[in-house]
Length: 346
Image 1: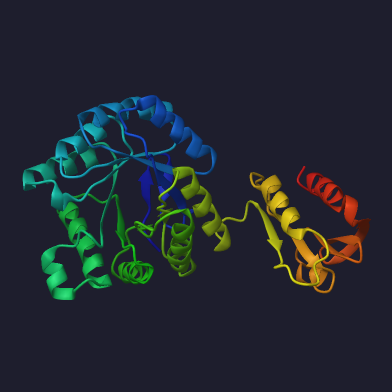
Image 2: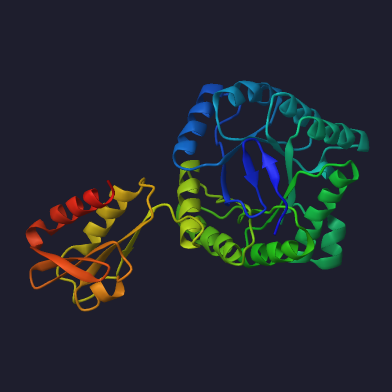
């Protein structure tokens, strides 16, 4: 089990719930827009939010943004150690920085001192495009070079007494990402920030992230996740929640199961399944609802469901825990089933 790192008002690692992260896609100095997007992301389930610090105006915005939000704020810093110091001074809860790219030992020492004095967590790591040349020469582009690059940056901070560290080591390749995090989980007990970097658009990125992140979570690897999509950050949160639920790590929701349609399906179960999913999307209650195509296997396959529907011969049967308790004509099935759901979730 990983050690616990405090990030603002959240505990990361040590068996605590896996936290969902995303990153604002608006320039940080555009304060009202940034605050609005962060609140939108929090509403859909974001636990930790990151903003970029590209210039001095971005750094100055940190304090104002921090005052207006309730979830932990992470500042993404590259190359300029003064931006890290400014973000910490602005009240940020965590910084994303690699000590190897911020210059001299003196720079690293100053940042480390500020991190410790202010109780700020730090995420360090690597991705497949930033591995040091000597590691590539020794190990090639592999899980070893990627993981050891991250650990090299960790060691620099450890030298200055920094302990609240979270590690990431991402690649756009799903197999390489999975191998790297498995390697890291054997080498360190720092919490791991898991994700497939540059995963792609909504469609492909969702598939790659689900396979990569899901594989690791099912192995018990990963303390916080970020789904990287070329899309609105809200989509990242939605996909991340679905990954956690599919891995059994979030049970406080309504699970909708539905069978693939076939030639036995006589009513529009596809439309109904989509409507049920939309109706229950924001309900935080551990329930399972089944929308099954036919009565041949429907009730039996959904015996563990709190409520279900299956159709055939002009009639839809409603069932609870596999037992049929009501039958209605196709014409009113959708309306009646939605009423049953509304009663169930009250």
